[in-house]
Image (tube, rainbow, N blue to C red; front, side, top):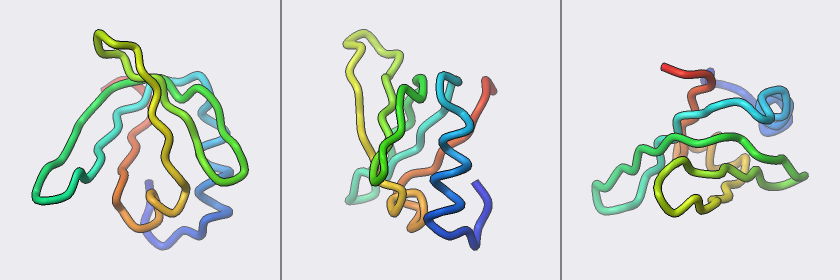
Length: 79
């Protein structure tokens, strides 16, 4: 994700990648950073849903403001 984007631009960018593999880097607080891989499952007006590829097959949701404030960093495509 590029720096200096607005929430509207972030929404449009994420919406174009539905169904693609993502690498998610989330700040867990107290110097904890979680890195997970998953698939961008769906987008909604204020949140987006990612289905994680680990053993439990759980979903996580984040808001677009999390991306704006760098609490969550998303990389699209397989790396």
